[in-house]
Length: 480
Ligand code: GLU
Image (cartoon, rainbow, N blue to C red; front, side, top):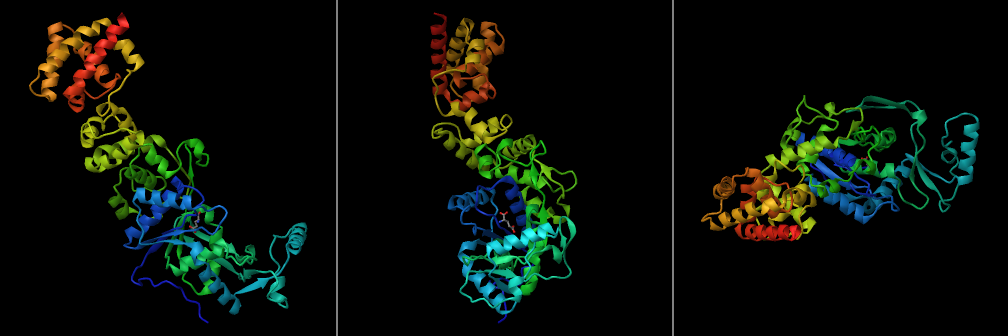
């Protein structure tokens, strides 16, 4: 029987990559960068991108983690042409290939007991040999089929495996270093490396972009692919991401999950731009739209060395995208944050106006949502430091006067509100700050906001006047 790949794939597609996460937790930034590189490479070559969920480790995989990964891929807008495929749904296929390999003598049953294998390892260690299966069962197949057994791949004994890693260059491993890998366990389940091989083959994967922690699997996988007569993909092993202290990136460094970056107020465009630069470059360019990334991305320029995560740079990019992307688009992401903060935005300025007002001041959308709460909701207390500084007896007269002037305005716009503050200051013969600061604290609750005219227009007349009166009462109360 001839072994053949299973999927009916378009033979005209010259590049097909995949992202193959194990659903044992959320999608972290390292995984997201691997996904991005794999996706970009496919898009750059007008190829296809496959999403495969490697859920064979039944103990560590959870449906929640799968959902979290899909949600993160969706948020990053990394779309796939095929999938998601689930390895747990493909066991029949893996076993079909294993059975055929047994028939063809590419694999063999091994009945060795745990005790025998332990003894073997012990002896090999004592003789200072590399621990390796001695092929006892390959040469002694008198055992009946119903005895518990595993299936091992007959790894070549001679020569070496050589591959040209698209990131790391030529890699060569002697076959004498490689064991006869178990491809099916005693309980009949196929093992991880084997599933990956059958999947990459069936799915017509031409380029495997993955983390460098898989580099040791590659020679084993290549040998199995060769035995199956399957094409060997090009491999690209991407380095790890460290924290800015040089240690492996972990929770200790702050956010590591992609969705946590959404929660913290980052735009997907900023995270993608950040991740693409983290280990890849195009001259000294820092800003890349997704379209530009697709046009420029090549594996040759992916760095071999580990990259260090730098939150300041990510913040900088985030602010850039908050200001530069179409406000209607940013508003959609911003809206999520109001919901997250429990802020009802049905009564207040349009979110595009908030972005125009606060885009220069806020580095994250979360910060923007929180710091613009007063445009949508009234408040009961004022910032303590701000009241100490600006709510003194001397603030009463300016507040009363400015309230009177604002009440009398026939139009409520930037010019008229500004004029009202200016007139108040000149009539009372005080500086603008003596009017503006108490007014700011009165209408926003704190000492920080965009310029007063912009703020007042955003808040609206009715709310402004009520808040000024509340502040006057508050100060009078305080002095009494
Ligand atoms: N499932 C593996 C992981 O999440 C990736 C395997 C591969 O890309 O070949 O690390």
